Length: 134
Image (cartoon, rainbow, N blue to C red; front, side, top):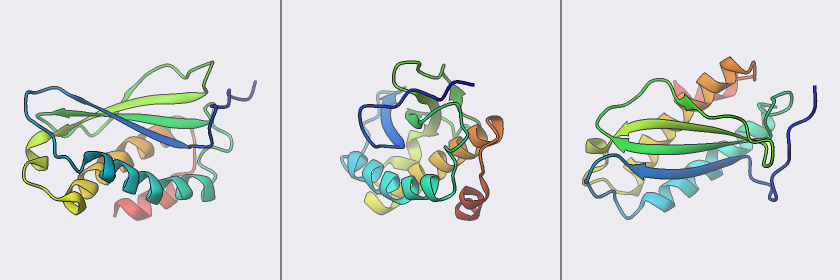
């Protein structure tokens, strides 16, 4: 098996977001993404989550919608950049009137659900992620 392509950076986890409703998302959104990335990225590295994976990093698009999905949607692994694109819908109602700390918890929970699901699919170690999800 050929090793996955490497991105032009050292990131192992990337975030994006898209609104599925007309609701406004909180301004602390990008700060919450950065906090979750800073917390979870070292765990992906330390747990060897990416070591034998057919991808070199994970991108997750948060869909601000009307439900909390348990399982992420998968895109094709990028042959050029080596990322596994995932997306997962989160209920935008949980984000109304929230401060950065509560928003971080919402994103962290959704990110862990997506990473654990993908880890099981691609046989990556997920024990460290499970410990955080409990």
